[in-house]
Every structure is written in structure tokens, then in C-alpha cells.
Length: 225
Length: 244
Length: 61
Image (cartoon, rainbow over all chains, first blue to last red; front, side):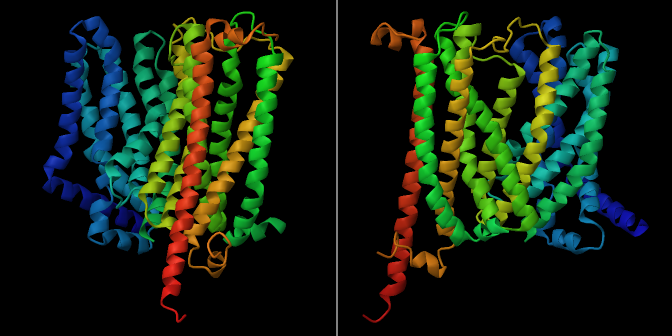
């Protein structure tokens, strides 16, 4: 058992280290998120009442889009240098290794979003409570985005136009996360309390954490044949 | 098992060739009956006048778009589980008709919505879920077209279809939740509680017509897929369509 | 439902655009799908006939 965990930890560290060598890969989705969030007030108008209403939605859509930006590269580098086949052949279950790669992706993409979200919330004049709910919802939701995206990345591995194909496949599946994530903040704004939404997000995260690595490894084996 | 013989492409080619003409004939006959019932027997609606007659294509298209997706998932599961080649072919053969019905459901829904509720599009749970279903169909078709290797295309498509079919109820549930929370719209989009029996019958007959058409199209299309994939087999070279 | 005249039928109580816009697109959609399927069949048969002729072209007469 611990041998498998060591393999996963090694994979995780390797991904993090290679990302550290190319900081642009991490910074670009984050900057995209920040810029997109700033574009909407410019397009819609500075009226704070309106911005408070649409802010959570915009933050979430921005999070979705920036999560998916670099998703197609999740397995591409490993395919190119042959390490993906090694991973598939190793005694460690491929699902665990996929989970390790997803965790690396989330640490590099989703976690920065969660940290930057309070700054964006200020742009939309969200209250402290709303911001806390937003951050919690993003904390629960962004891992799901990485998990589902990984399945899409495995399915479209090596195909022409994989980036767009990935978006088309995965964005409809993101919709429940979007609905409950943005809905959590809106519920809190409306005085209803976000407990129900947060519970559903937690449930989605649990189910995705179990199913997506397994589906992703199945898809990888299909792609590698 | 009797049906297992049709897992062989050659047998399926023959069976499909016998089924599709019957299916199309049935579809035509049912359409004639359904439209007659819908336009010459069913009376005008008390509230909606003549515009309600759109339901005789809108509801069948919606129902069948969902049934076809489930059928695709069924064939996908068969293919992944039993490794039969024809399962992937059937899944791919069903997809275009399902996508068409999905689009028709949205189009006719908009044309029904405008005179009834004043808007071309409303974000109610069913219409929104239907839109997302269209995206799922398009995603499946795009993925299977993008993969050159037919074996990989079938299996990757099967994963997409199965992931999709699990997600459709989740998506519907989440959209319904989202919709009821935001129920500021005063439109009530449920059908009028009591439909005249003849209206219901016409709708059912049209639904069966759409189903027969979908079956016919799927079996017609799967024959071409079989020919393309089995082109090196001896039986293909001896078909009278090819060797006169 | 008894229609008093064909004009009344086509008018659909003022909703002609919506009703016939719906049925029209359904008809067009089905027709296009059928046409595409027929075209695909003839292309596949043509390609198979050609490749069969090429395969036999090298045989002695």
C-alpha cells in the first residue's frame, strides 16, 4: 500500500516541479481569470447593486474557463516522452496515479483561484460573508473541475483540435458545479443560507473523487491502445 | 442465445437491411394517423387556440431525444462490457437522429413558447436540460469524428455516452433546483392539467412514429458503417450492391 | 375539429407562422437527414466498387 502512495507522491512532486520550471503555465490561467472578471464590470457598468448580483456568477464562469484552459496538457507531456505508458504498466493502479495528477493540476490551477477570489470579490462589492461562502464553494468546486477535466483530457489525448473538443465534452458536465457553486453565494445573499448548496457541492466532490480517476484511467487505456 | 448471432457484422447487415424498410413504413403510417388525429380530430385548445398543435411534434421530439440517448448508453455499455464491435457502430448510428430530435425539440419549443408565454426562450428546467443534452450529443459526435481509429472511436465514445447518461439526471436535478430558486418568472410551463384524450392519443402516435423513424435511420446508417469497416471481408466483396 | 375552409386551416387561428414554422423545420430536418444518409450510402458503395475493380484489375483476363 505505501509503495503505491510513494509512487503517487513521486508523480505529484514531479508534476509540481516541472510546473515550477515553467511558471507561465500556472500564471496564464490565473491572469486570464483576473482579466475576465475585470472585463464584465467594464461591459455592464459600474453600478454596485448590479455587480453584487452578477459577481458570483462571473467569478464561477471565470473559474470554469480558466480551469479548462490548460486541461488538455494534463497527459500530453507524459504521452510525448513515453512516461504515460510506463505509468499504465506500473503495478500502482492507474486510477491512483490519475488522482495524483489531478491533485497536481488542482494545486496549480484551482488553488490559486481560491486564493485570488477574495480580491475579485472586492471588485464586485461582495460582503465578507458572501466572500467566505464564495471561497468555500470554490474550494469544494474547483477540485471537481479538475477531476472531470481529467476524464476529458484522457478521452481527447493526442487528437487534432483536442483543446476545443475537450471544452465541448466537459463544459456541459461542469454545469451542476456551476449551478450549486454560484447558487451558494446567491442563497447566502438572499438570506437563505448556503448550507444546502455546500452540502450538494461536497456530495458532488465525493462522488467525483471516486468515479473520475477510475473513468480517467479507463479512458487513458483506450487512448493508449 | 439467439440474438448473439447478430453481433457478427455480416448478420447484422442482413438483419438491418430487412428491418429499416419496415421501420420507415411504420413511421410513415403512424405519422399519417397521428397528424390526422392531431389536426382533424383534436379540437382547438381552450387557452392556446390552434398554436398548441405544435405539441404533436415538440413532445415526441423531446421524449425521443432522451430515449435515444439512453439507447446509445445501453449499446455503449454492451460494447464496453462484451467487446462486441457492432455495439459501437449502433451507438454511432443512433447519435445523429438523437441530435436532430434534440434540436427540433428546442426549435419547436421556442416557436411554441413565443405565442404562449411571450418569449422565444425561457430558462425553465426542461428546456435548459434539453439544451445541455444537445451539447452532450454534439460532444459525442465531435469526439467520434475526431478519432481516426474506429476501435478507439467506439470505445472513447462509449465512455462519453455512459458518463453523459449518468450526468443527465444530475444536470436535470441541478437545473430544476436552480430554476425553482429563481422562480421570479410567473410563467407556468406545465401543460394544462386535463388534456382531451384525443390530444394525448395523437401525441402518443406521433411519439411512436418518431421512434420508428429513429430505428429505421439507425439500422440504415449502421449498414454503411459495417461496409466501411468490413470492406476487406469476402462477404462484402460478394454483395450484389458491389459485385453486379 | 372541422375546418371551415383550407384558408382557415393554413391560418391556424393566427398562429400560422409558429405552427407551420415548427412542422416545416421538422420536415426539412428529416428530409436533410434522409438525404445525407442516402448520399453516404452511395458514396460508400462507389468507393467499395472502385476498390474491388482495382483489386481485380491486376488479374489475368
